[in-house]
Image 1 (cartoon, rainbow, N blue to C red):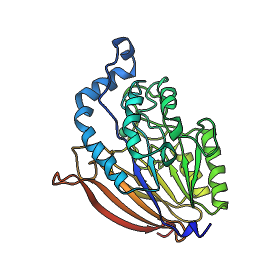
Image 2 (tube, rainbow, N blue to C red):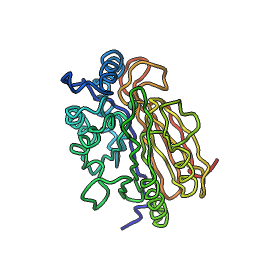
Image 3 (cartoon, rainbow, N blue to C red):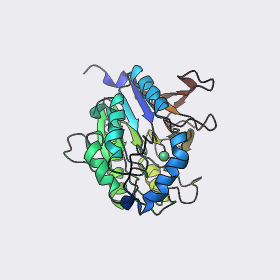
Image 4 (cartoon, rainbow, N blue to C red):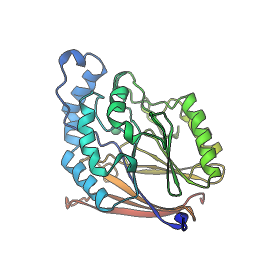
Length: 304
Ligand SMILES: [Fe+2]
């Protein structure tokens, strides 16, 4: 073991690929929330989420050979069973399950049957170290980095996109954050919904955001990664041991919209020893010339 902690850890963060096209769904299986979701997809999402763009973005990720990839949910559109194998074929372009960590989003948990269907296909990507079955939050240690995956996907009523972490997961999350802090690891929390209560639109936020925010402030973390809003964002949560950067990434497949909504991913260099982060946004270039660097920023965890 020669100084693994001094090595820069390269982490790619992607979210919300909404992998399509939507398979044909028998009408009898549309008589629930999926009806609105399916209509929505055919009306809008099919034009917003472009699978050629997604494939190009995934290829760019692979070309940078990150040590690990975090994919924070909404892999599919209406949580219909046949969507998941289709999403898996695409996700494999990012790497093996041991090198790609996934957490579910609200579209992966669309109705009651959705999450079990996702587990059947994506379990290897959501498995904690030495775990035989998926339980959230899960912990994966990679070098000096602890990757902690939280599930905020719960079935909701039509037109709602809320999420919930729940008491049991929050309790376990607190324990994992303490344990990995004691081990001196750089703690990265992955969750689909933004963890902060502030700024969430009605019907789209975490219903227990306040409790989660309190917990993170109390136990600390070095970085939180999320998706859900389909736009790039960087916020800071004051916490014991130093401010936590809360980093949101746009959808990996979105074509139209403002530069902050267009397809992108984050290439994050983590220097665990100094708690420094260098973040490069890479994505769809405005001139239509494929995938490239959009912007860069450097920050030191814990420094305002
Ligand atoms: Fe999404």
